[in-house]
Image 1: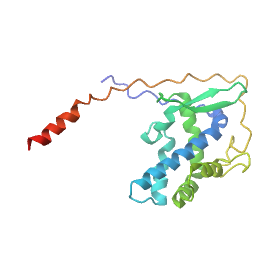
Image 2 (image 1 turned 90 degrees about the vertical axis):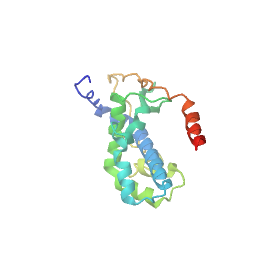
Image 3 (image 1 turned 180 degrees about the vertical axis):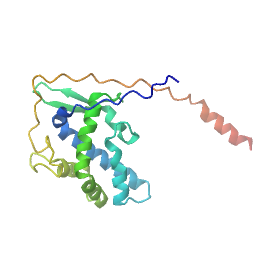
Length: 193
């Protein structure tokens, strides 16, 4: 081994959180909705407690449950706002991913139990209504998570001297999947009997 342990976790840029809070909230609620759906599909039946447990690590970028955040990139827009965009490939989790994680965590810190309750109630056929309810909207106001940068407010503009964020780092390709030959081998074993 190389020693030295894992590289230090990138620190979020907290002053950027309000810039992406609305988008991060939407992404978090959509993700929680997906997690709840998966939990239910597992047939074990979801309780409010199990949902709460399932969504708790969603914003932890170093946990498997938070890996979805690695796919997001913060992109400076011409109007001075910052967009949180889902990229088509997995990224390495740098400062921007950590910042998205912090914005995500802010949502859960505020409304995790309400969110679990609503997901448990399952009154939502799609995540859109739930997203608006939690994150706010131009028509509905601040939403449950009345956060700075919520979707009921005009999107904040970055300060003109804000340092531009890092480029999205595509994650290095993992080892290619094993060749499909393995399947054949399995069949042969069965034939032996």
